[in-house]
Image (cartoon, rainbow, N blue to C red; front, side, top):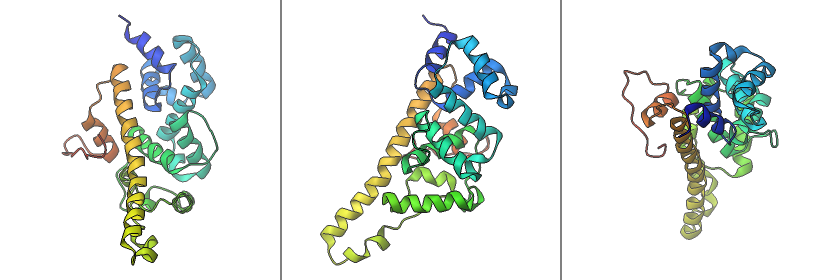
Length: 233
């Protein structure tokens, strides 16, 4: 039966999540590693786990940036790179789409929980919010997925966008359903990735529960009761 180090080595060499890579690195190298250079981190981890793939390191360094800086929420270039790395492990196109943002926001909140803001301007820079507004229009996202709410982002433009079809119930209903499904599709993929992450963390030896995930996403204190939303777990 493989020991924990063998299991973690296999995880690091697979398509693992940034959160898992960071926890393994933290336990292996100690908390000071968060302030080491990428070159030093690679040397130390490769010496202990073999030559770890670049995709894992990209995710790990994205997680390191989220924990040690506010760049994800304030600087548009870092915002794109981090979202890409958390989702793909690569910088595929240096922009962020609606799905990449959904997962990027969720994992960023898991890595470094922030209280859910009443207004996203309390968390994100105006440059990033301006980009997201253009993104919703470009992708035709008329309703915010539920996962966006942990960043204070909630919108519903369906009625306004479909007003021209209000006198044709059949067309209106079809377009309305399509708009709802577009948001639900993002939530479904993000929810599946949360489940995969929980399974991976447990396999790596970390006793993660749905309650822990919800507390992290909402930045709730240990004494504060939480309700696990149906869309999340």
